[in-house]
Image 1 (cartoon, rainbow, N blue to C red):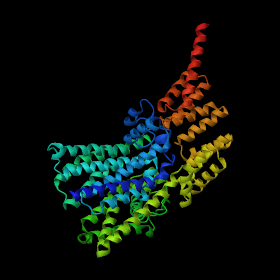
Image 2: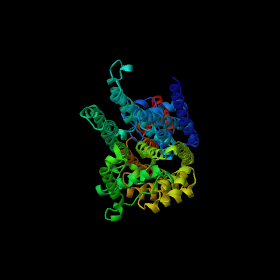
Image 3: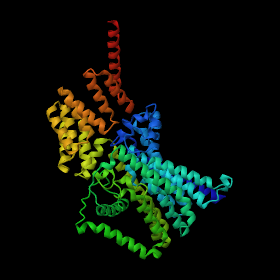
Image 4: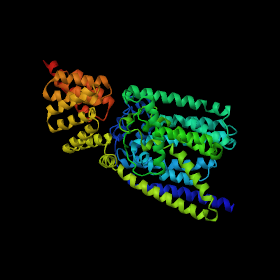
Length: 578
């Protein structure tokens, strides 16, 4: 009884330590605001407060970015609680991250893995996870892992426990619960479709083999993961154009990127310094023998593991396999939009990092235990040193997520050639009316990529705001020469032509923007404004209504629609009087 009470107290102390230290480390993130992509997910997302928003979220209608319906549903609920105050969104991300760390402790203890608490604490405090936690948009990451861990817990109860105590002798209830939670994880981020492979790896490590029953039990998980993953790929290709991104990557180049990425992520886990939001984009030359070094190292490592598998043990192999499988969708075999800027990102290894942390901690346990009577003192000192160092690094890393300017300035400091940082900092300065700085940053982006349509479009917007319509027009036209399907440039050029009184050209460009992206609310509004000017009131009402259907928060469309409808009533009343 006494030992039982002591264990409970130790567990409670361990849990409190993880919670308190995690919250302390992430205090700077709580004071952060919105950054890149947060406008799509929260600030300008009409799905969060429109009456039909919940239906549209799950139907995939007017989704501003990826198809992650459970994430948008969660954000809609959060919006109902605290509106656009960023603190609430940051607290939810941090809370989910802490829950994930505690669930990892629970699962590893269930699997009887040494150092479960220490692994959990490292996961909670590791600075490589700051990007997933401090960035509101990456609710996708923390929420999907939360459901993955719950699904794993339910599955292990089904696979390893009788379940009779809580399910009346029906352990299959845990199986059904695991499937439901896996679906929730997929609806949070489809990339976790690799989950059943991870379960197979763990089963192989635990049982020394994979039997037919394991494959049969997980077959439904495989089908659901594959189906959902393919659906999301199709949806994003057709609705947000990710399939139209031409990266020029041959199969050989993709393999070279993947091999380099594996070592990159391992390096950042073991030595987490100079972490940045956008890392330098590697130049990959398939004809250069030096660019095959990372691939050679991967092949050598895998060959060494194969030859030494008996000495290394199943645990070592399972941890490496877990790491590689969880990273596989992000290694370059599938094109990601962010590959325009960089091939790697910290948030890509949020799940995969667990495998390496487990491996390193267990290697450390083996090494320290060989010290004999000094082992306990060394282990306590090592744990405190590692956790305090990680906590300090996380606290420092959180500061760069304060706002747009802090994020991009830090990125440029660490990666001066970051196209993403220069273009987005230029956009931010333009929105703030800091035109000279905006021009400088967009020109910096063009130094990096001379044929970057977005930079020309941004420069056009800067000069349009400055009142130089001729220069604005020339930049918009340059953007369209490079990217004829650039909806923003078409819309902006339509605005310039409308200001110049060339209604025919304005109408053409608005029509092109709407043709390319029917869900572009601003283009519908601008087109409606043009139609109203030309006296085509019925057509204008149609465009304003369409704009509001897409984005109910578009205030100018509401005002314009009301004005045109009143004008139509006045004209109608005048006609009846006559």
